[in-house]
Length: 368
Image 1 (tube, one colour):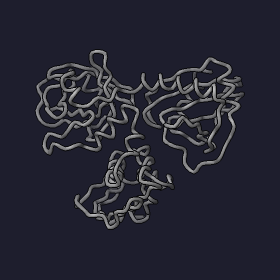
Image 2 (cartoon, rainbow, N blue to C red):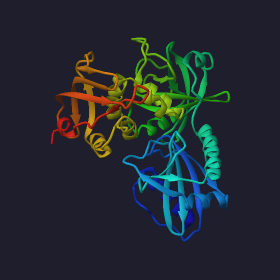
Image 3 (cartoon, helix red, strand yellow):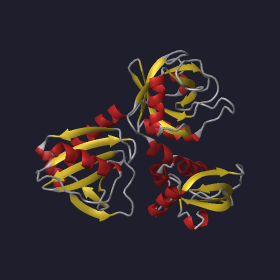
Image 4 (cartoon, rainbow, N blue to C red):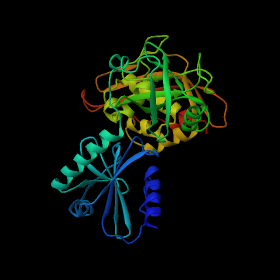
């Protein structure tokens, strides 16, 4: 019963549901969880056995309310006498009650210990962030390695067959092809996914897409090859960075939040389009100022969006405020594609703070 309940609680956490569940009448249990996204099935879990630490979590002081709990890869699942609480820890080491949307104060000695545990879990769960110039000689052509999809935990073997600016890769066998396709929900897709590439003791942060294209030479049932990008790898045709791949590379290294915070205003707008096309609500929330409900509404209703004019000049380009009008085509679920023009507004508190999208008017984007 307890094992089943624990699995059920993890499933609650996967959706980050703002509810308090019930468990068996157990006094003081805590588990630390690290995963790449709020909906990731693949996670690294450590059960805390120290009664002092568990009690410090139970006795954490509720501080001020927050409008938005900061993005996090770190969760605490706390069970106390039939009540289940979910805490998160942000990049600054601050604790939050996810359900109550309140900041928490945890006893300093317990906090220090918990942060050290999370540092170990983080290192175990995510990959090493190395530049393509360093990785290129580590996995030369015809090298076979293992790929782990960080959302599902599925693993398959692949081989680098070509590519100078990034790796052109093929699954080894038909079984490997089937596993890769399963990671994509049974349908090949250009969507980028955060992955780990395991080879010679390395676990490298990377990004792959799932669309067979070009040539392929292995008898694996995969009609072509797919691409794997690493930090600062380039596209073959334009020799440019692909931001959608770079976002997933940093996600695979566990440093997505830090990367997004350093993006230019133009980069944040581009990330908005990437998040919609990727159906990535966590990514969208990282660049939203407020009103996360509207962010989720966009994810739930939009299938695809694409710019019709890629080069536009901003109408306002200040140190703290940025505005740019863009024309794009938008495809909502069960509706025809249509043209939209919208002026995006971004703000930041200081020149060292991150750019954030001001409230995007969903009524102007969605055809209701």
